[in-house]
Length: 534
Image 1: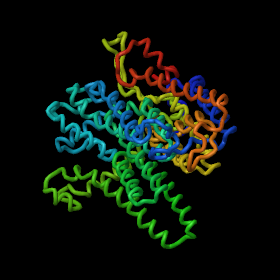
Image 2: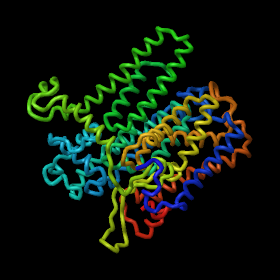
Image 3: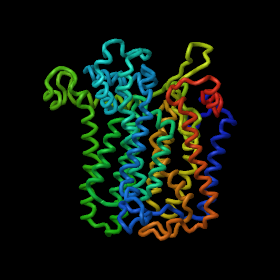
Image 4: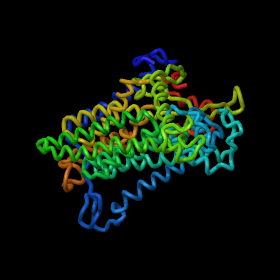
């Protein structure tokens, strides 16, 4: 699809831009007005521990749990609640939907040792799904017509192939908390970011379907956390963890190359700045090269290659013969290299039509969300329907442009590395799709940027709530902010209203995300942009 295509989306007209652009304008105006008055406003820094007499929230008589255990208990509780909510009715529909017809089939083929059907993405996510399916082996017969997309299977089998997505969705939430906490040293920012992501429709749907995207998002988020820990502490384990998480992401989807390049750019920029402070010391350069080369080349390559070991082990011959030779009677590592070339040609030359194809420029406006599953209950003319709609939370997705724009301005003006990382990963991954999109694209490809957008939004929410502060480092000098109380109330009302809007959207759209049966008239109330959302 051409970059600025407008005629490929049915129902596209001037009026469909009204709600998205109006929301973008309102949110952008709110942030612009606040930061024009308080350009240096930022949430306070909190200590990692809460010892007596220390910490920004430490008060006499307060329970030691309030902060000492917060970073362990609260994120775990939120992730557990998300896991349980996503787990409910996870086995429905009892058949493969959307891209599950490729990934689940391939996972089942790995279970029985057959040649994988789906090879256009690396195999890690499908191996994780295969491991879960292997535990439910008694609930399905892999040879019994499993390749039919409409094949109804045991609920336990459907639960098994979707369960890894729920697990990694929960882990991604923990990664968002860890990243936000590391970036801003503020528990409120981290908690709100976690809640925002949990209430995003695309995130929730991707956490309940056997596709590859949720695994990539999880690994990219944790890679960003490790990269920031490296920036702050300069400890080798963090740079190697960054490379490991990026290797896991690459072993899931090639689209994570965008995140790989952006994080590498961020780390190298920090390294060059430090090298400059060291007056371009040769010793400094060599020590960093000794870390970066294995961390960003060797570690990801080993992880990526390891994800193909089950594929290499297929065929005749011993494990040693297949693993230790380049080509052993058609098996070995030669076929892995050949598959990489096939993957590149597939994605670079792909020319296909799909009713939910959409250009990258339209993704933040959420013009063409994708229906993964839809059916009328009782046949034609039925009064109830159910479906799985991969649609983002409008109040999050329509906040992408204003939050990233204001964040970029603040990052550049005040040289804030934390905001720079968020905007680089949020805007950068979208810009990469704008610059180099393949022939068939879906709105949920922007999903990999959403965790960083949620953290940025949470940062702005807490900043508006607290008002302008007189410090952002060291001891907290003013726990209530230096903006007068009466001046903070309008901003706090805006923050609460926004959070309530996000929550109400999620509750309102929940049936459309989970194939929960609803009346036809009620389902029609969800099509805010009319026919283009159908």
